Length: 128
Image (cartoon, rainbow, N blue to C red; front, side, top):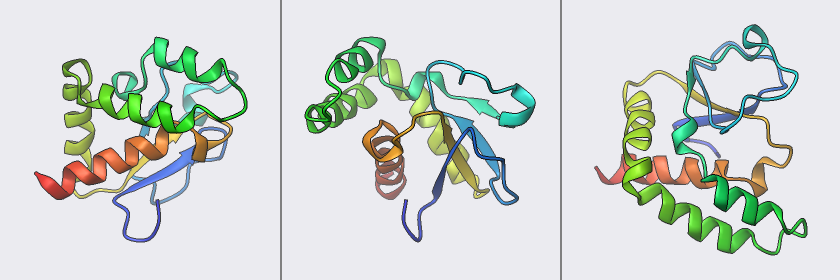
């Protein structure tokens, strides 16, 4: 998510910006209180998100102590066949060369699935 990153990240509660390109919602559930018009979402990539079981397990502990284990488990899920097609679709959007902005409702983006997903997409782009 630093310079040279092919993928941008924004919170859904912030207004869309010129240059966002394709806006991809990367949350399993639609964000509360946000209209489809305000969100300006082009693609809803539910299947690239952590499983319900993993999300529930991670959020049971609010201290953040589980984050490293969450990251490992989510990376494993991203390699599962259930996620492969959705990840490939997301990578394909980035490969098209237009800007891609991942949009999320999470409060603490840095302690969420989003940085793991960005890393996975960028790693895939660099090795395929």
